[in-house]
Image (cartoon, rainbow, N blue to C red; front, side, top):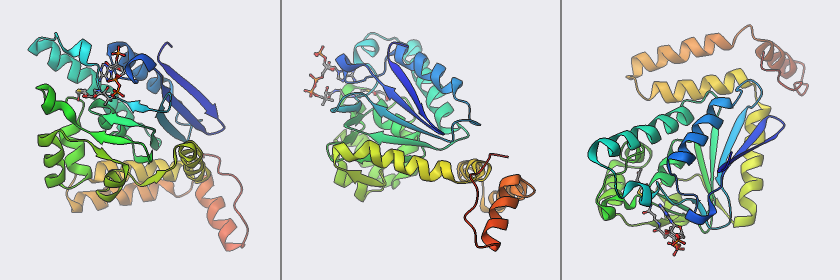
Length: 258
Ligand code: CAA
């Protein structure tokens, strides 16, 4: 892989987008590699994935403007589909995904972060959807995920003005969960990932499915989905062992994903 690195540490994997000459901007090649790496993740072995950008300045500075500059309408739509398909794979990956936003998260970069389950960032992070300033709309899910993550009014303000916001404002509007000094970001992401990986993987994966799929349903159907996923956890070794340990006032043994 020329642009993507994947490192595994126990049950946690760290995916780094590494295209320094363009502040990790996403061109077709980067998207292709990203899709291939996401497809390769074994959700049994890896229990939490962290996505970050190489270097100290940028998470991802957007889709590649040079590549987009000459696209036709048909090619533009196809480029949007390419990005959307990859980001949807990240969003629906069975395991939780944390975006460790270490700098610019603009356009496709913010859209990538929003396709993750949890976003944390460094103090130097900058977020925004600059697309209307370039004559386009966001094309990798930004109009949809931003309006679902922050208020519709705030999403529209960010989309219409194309103004960037800094980390404290991203925290205030709920786009990120926490802000850290740059050197503390990856340790914090790994600590969070370990806390997730320590819990029963079947239950964690069921929580992700319940929240993501439940949000697309009405409440009556959503709670039925939860009942089904709740029921699925019973009779697993991890449920039996986890509850037995609690009742015996013991610390549970490491969960086995069974
Ligand atoms: N695409 C292509 N190249 C990019 C890029 C992008 N999105 N962002 C940065 N680069 C390149 C620059 O062209 C520059 O290359 P050269 O050294 O060859 O000139 C290099 O990365 C470094 O960038 P700057 O010199 O501009 O660095 P800076 O610190 O002065 O500014 C920045 C940093 C504010 C992030 C600025 O680079 C910038 O505004 N980038 C564009 C951000 C943007 O508009 N992103 C949205 C793209 S549209 C999109 O993503 C659509 C979608 O939804 C699918």
